Image (tube, rainbow, N blue to C red; front, side):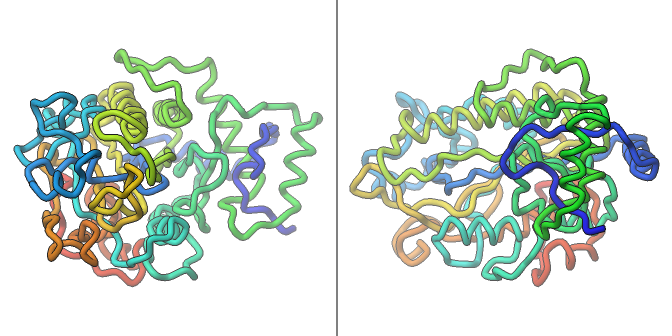
Length: 409
């Protein structure tokens, strides 16, 4: 029988689950819950966030010369940056993350990015999620290859809160993709759930992550483990946005203790060519959603953050200078954030290249001084515990440099 490798219906329709569990899958699922695993939550900011206004280099005077109308004001001024270290500051709408910096849980990394020079959203996202810049033939994503390298067998170890399996989670290792646990409707095997399950078990799709039967079984187990609804704790209030709901679902699945090891969420709306704004405006609204969501997630997870790392990324940055429409065009270097109990926070990592014309990439963009794969490598080994030899599989064709030291060892 040819089996599908789909995890969730591509159209995003409600999945109808069978209750006919296979003993071999149940045994693996139970084994996965015996020990709480370290968790990586990967957040993709699709559309190329302006890292220069997200993590503001207010100590570089060139920043203000290049952005006369959209630069974020210096700390202490109206709607100014939230000072971190006297040179870098957070956008004012990201103030909810300042307590994480103060507690040593937040480690931004500036001037990160890809060695590939593309300014195509599609190509750059593909290269980042496959972790093979410049190579379009890579079939699986880096997070899936991590699960492969660690012999993951349960779909519950890798979960994406999306309607389709993201590129970074595609591959031979079992994963699940769904926008909400509550969208699954469990039906008796004699009902319509049986028909839907059968329809998937007789199809094939090389891009999908696990067999139909195991996907449906995993969904049913997850639904049982999260029965009764979900209420955030510790005063956590998630934004009422798709991103906020996705992060709440990740917290929900994490607390179900079903063996979750890698989770994925995404937020969009970062392609700010026009009317970007500075302390207020279009970008500010998106950063508010991002910061409020992450702050709520860390509060909700509570002591689980001791074993959790949140990693943010975006395909590339924006041009150093504002354009004639009050926005920014596609650029190169960008900023990432690493957050969690295992993180050596309270420090901005990466070498700042400067913004003078002779310091910029092609005289127009922030230069890349930290390959994003060095960040991936450190998170995979120092946090998740992948053996260093596994990096040849997780990050093919890449030799990691000296660790940044972002993760405690």
